Image 1: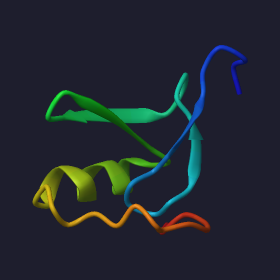
Image 2: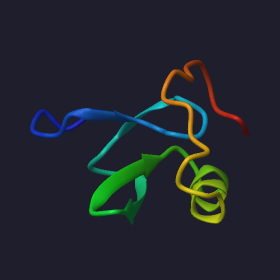
Image 3: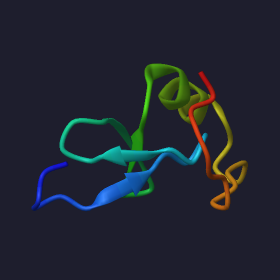
Length: 61
């Protein structure tokens, strides 16, 4: 991970990702980072209130 970039948590699967290289999307002025295109697409297709910030573990694959 780049020393200047803080890690981020994928809002779909909870995986920690490198913000310098991860896929990302914006919602309501906030940038969200993803481990894969699958998680990014799932995020983009879901309503704003359907995310659980307590997820952790691995990728949803």
